[in-house]
Image (cartoon, rainbow, N blue to C red; front, side, top):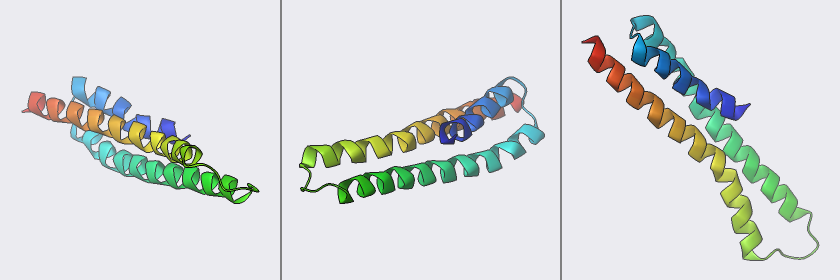
Length: 99
């Protein structure tokens, strides 16, 4: 669900790129905010799941397992912010076309 929310600004930016309008630009702002919140929430959820897993182990885990869990938690944030970067670049091109 978080990936869909994070991809929605990119879809809206595609519409704006080809048909720039104030209405579409106004929708980009709340969609961007929702994508940022989704990225943060999914990253925190991944960290919580990793810490719960670590707490249930009888022995201390090696550092490579902890690093893998942390990396897996950060993938969603990377995807979300990558989509947002591409979306706002498309909006910038659309704004240039509008002028």
